[in-house]
Image (cartoon, rainbow, N blue to C red; front, side, top):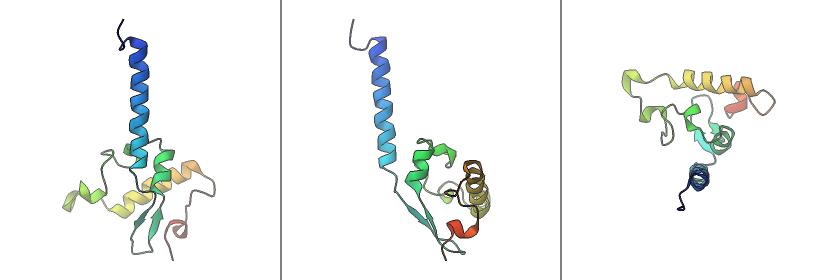
Amino acid sequence: MGFLTSPNRLWLGLLLSFILAAAAVASVPPVITIETGHGDVTFAHRDHQVRAKGQCVQCHHEGAGVHSCRSCHDGERAPIAREVVHQMCKGCHNEQGGTASPMQCEGCHGG
């Protein structure tokens, strides 16, 4: 029997998955500042990625590598970012509950 028998392939696949997931988390900036007309939002991007278990598609519907909505959407196809972000963030924060999930404007937007 060679090295790539079924049990070895399974372990090799798991190891590769772990390495790729760790690399994805390491490549994400820990904090992103989003400038808005109502005060900047300091977004703990890496913390959110860890909570989402590296599933970028939970927020970025195109998956990893998408930096902003406008990088895919432009002109008339672009959704109104404020509405999309508020719906997505507030929806998840409502599900998570607790004081660590802000629901009021000042919880995310700086003074």
